[in-house]
Length: 64
Image (tube, one colour):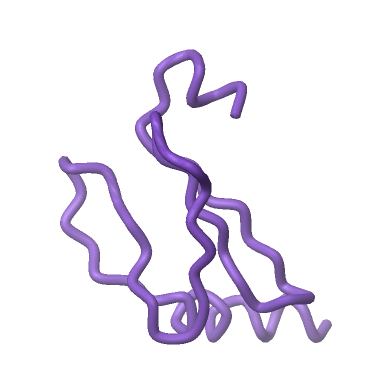
């Protein structure tokens, strides 16, 4: 929230225990994303990324 207040366009909070990502967008309530939900990205970044993809990448790290 602090970063959004000072100009960030977007923030993600990744919760591996719940396997969800909260997206923080200026002027909006946080959005809870799970499974095949696409993550919002800043306008300058063309990226199609889902919550499942993020956790697929993190699995080896989280299971170490």
